[in-house]
Length: 182
Ligand SMILES: Cc1cc2nc3c(=O)[nH]c(=O)nc-3n(C[C@H](O)[C@H](O)[C@H](O)COP(=O)(O)O)c2cc1C
Image (cartoon, rainbow, N blue to C red; front, side, top):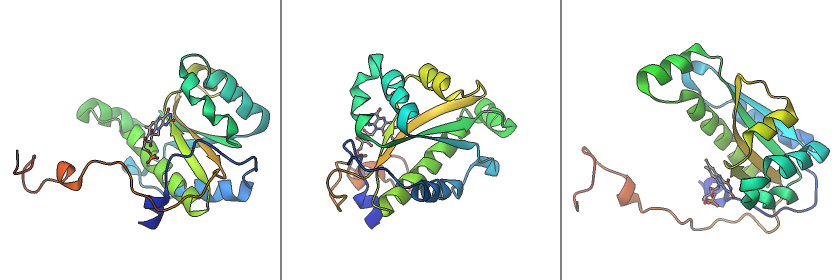
């Protein structure tokens, strides 16, 4: 619970590289996540240096300029889903649930929490130019780019803090949907 409370979206980073061993440790946490039919459709591309700069310039340019703060992050992890799993296609068709997105969401949260535990900051970026990122990283069409995760040592401490969230009674119901107060 402490790690969950410490985690926040970090949008300002120190000018200090993240050790490859730490990146491996956080991706290891993602590797252990649950997934639909244990399909493990997640794939991660770690970008640093010049390639990362290209991602910032082209992948976060244009209409997604709001995410240019990512420039200070020493690394960006590109989280992708392999779309080649029959189980996901059947699931989406029958249930209308995009299981591959759930799998990536859980894996990325594992990764983010492990990063927090190691004193690293992250921020999920959902707004990016997929076409440009695909081009820069040579990602094939059968792979969906789901998120960009900035990674680095945060400017300022990661501390336990109150989060702006809905009250528990607004989201937790017992025995029927909706609360008694109506
Ligand atoms: C799916 C998803 C997409 C997000 N996209 C962006 C984004 O494009 N840019 C950004 O600055 N933050 C983005 N965020 C971060 C949210 O704004 C942030 O998690 C939320 O405001 C709660 O703040 P906290 O993470 O500090 O607790 C995204 C988060 C999620 C889960």
